[in-house]
Length: 92
Image 1 (spheres, rainbow, N blue to C red):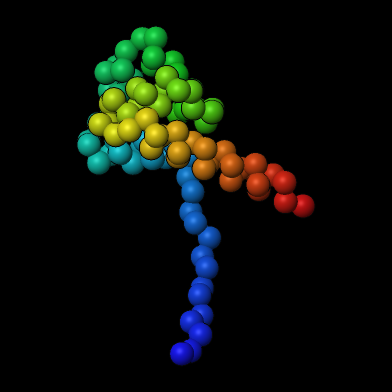
Image 2: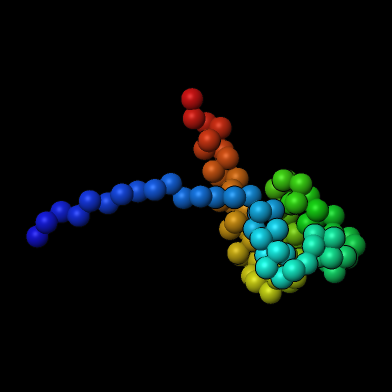
């Protein structure tokens, strides 16, 4: 039995706004249309995510509802993004 060489590649991680934009493009819709569909007051929470802020539970819930996904998906994308940013900031 020979040893297998494992090549590790860094995982690419993007901010949640990049995933949102990609999904909107796939659906041929715009940020404006999405925010209009979400409505007030929840629109403000989603807009904060689009501006690069930490995702609130309300924003995750509205994105899940709009895209037909789970809240856990959006929370996971956000947690991974912020964890990566924290680790990068800690590197000398």
